[in-house]
Image 1 (cartoon, rainbow, N blue to C red):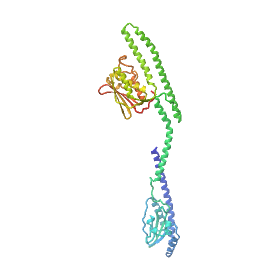
Image 2: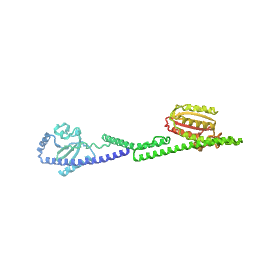
Image 3: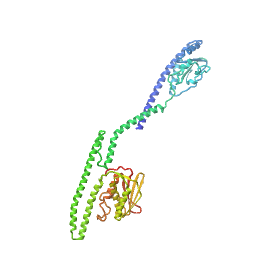
Image 4: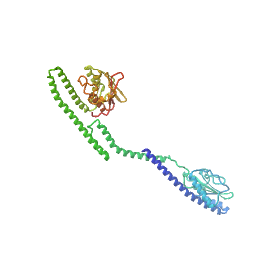
Length: 467
């Protein structure tokens, strides 16, 4: 937009300059032509006077003062420090020379421009400023502009030159044109700022509803219970807001229906599982009884894991400052009681998180580490406003092509479904969901010395949303 405004101003200045120069040249052409005819008339008048009367007429003209021309008759051509150049001077000189040559039928016509301070007017080369004011200064000076003076000298007779000096009335005839004058820079800056201010106001009024829609779309991914979007703004944006709110309601209804479905399934499955367990305990064959109980325990674990998954992904609580180090120490103490080896090093200031959700996230990571690696070495550090929790176990690690797959629900790389060898495969998925809801993430990598490293990253100032 700035480039467009500047281009438009440059183009307008170019057109305006061309028109101004053309107008000035036209004005100079008319003024110089009229001036040339007046000088020709003066020349004819002095030609018609007897020689003895010429000085009398000149004295009368000087004593009158305020005339258009300063006229003198000299014995020779007075040298003039000619100034100026360019098309303006060429128009004036050519017009005056051509008209005088045609009107007076003479060839010896000298047309020049002089500065007032260097202009000489008599045979003895007296300066203009040395004359009495009424003799020539009133007609040839225009203070404080000091425009150039047009000087025309014609030969009346041998050793007799008519000297005529006058002003054209165009004070800046030789001042030239400055593109970067102060006035044009100020005008361009004012126009540019005005256009930018009005454009910013218009763009802001149009894009504000779009920005609001964008924020609502980002918030929807983490909080289905966020307030509905205000259905205002331009017609298209308002229609989009209506469709967005309708989509949010439908998604929320589907999620609630999913929760009710999982809760009902888990509740309804508990009763037949309990009845089957009672019947299994009545079996006479110990081996068959053990197999039946193992299958029932696995089924109960799957139901419990599915219900925990739904509740874990939809846990509602308010964020508050939480000491992550203390949270890890408490979890480590519980695991040590069960015989696991957990070591924690490093410390970070409290983070604003959802305590129960963060505890579940860290618990899942620690339990996964001690289950597969029998050991968990936890390192806490903070770099560039980001808190890192690295959990290193001594397990077999995970192949690179499988590291993202283990975050999917009910995915376990360990083939057994026994209650003694593996869980339901929901822990890592729930942990990553909680981390991302806090603005962070979880990444898995194999350690060069062996084992798996799970890295939990959390921003220092996260935008915590409903999980």
